Image: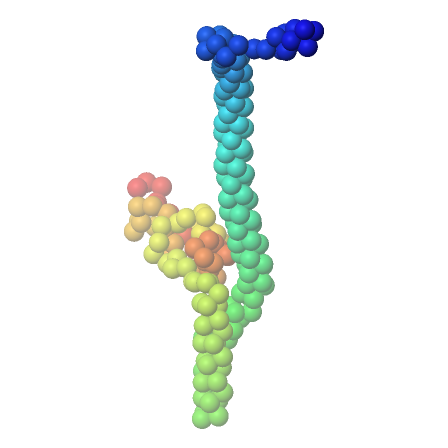
Length: 196
C-alpha cells in the first residue's frame, strides 16, 4: 500500500482546467519578459539612431573639412606658382626692355646689317611668344585714365585737353600676369588745369 500511496502523490490529474490554470501564468511571465525585451530593444534602437545621426554629422563635417583643405591647398599651389613665375618674370623684364629698345633703335645701313637686324627681330618675336605663353601681356597705358594700381606716375603736366588724370606717355611698359599687375607702367600723366 505504501507503493500505491507514492504513486498517488506523484499523480497529476489530466484535468484540462488544471492545464489552463498553469498556462496563463506562464504566458503572463513570457509577455512581461517579451515586453521588457521590446522596451530594451527600442532603447537600444534609439541609442543606435542617435549614434548614427552623430556619425553622419561627423562624416558631413569631415567631408566639408576635406573639401576646404583641398580648395585651400589648390589655392596655395596656384599662389606659389604665380609667385615663382612673377619673380622670374620680374627679373627677365628689364632684359626684355633693353632688347626692345635696341630693336627700336637699330637702323641697318647695308645688306649684312639688314640680315643681322632680321635675325635680331626673330629672336625678339620668339622672346615675346614665350612671354605670351606664360600669360604675360603688355598693358595699354597711353590715352587711358590714370590708375595708381596699374600706373606709376613719373611726370605730371597740366593740360586743358583732359578732364581727368590721363596717361599721355609711357616711359616704361607695364605688364600683367594672369590679369594681375606684374609690373606697373611708368607713365607721364596729364592733369586738368587748375582753373578748369
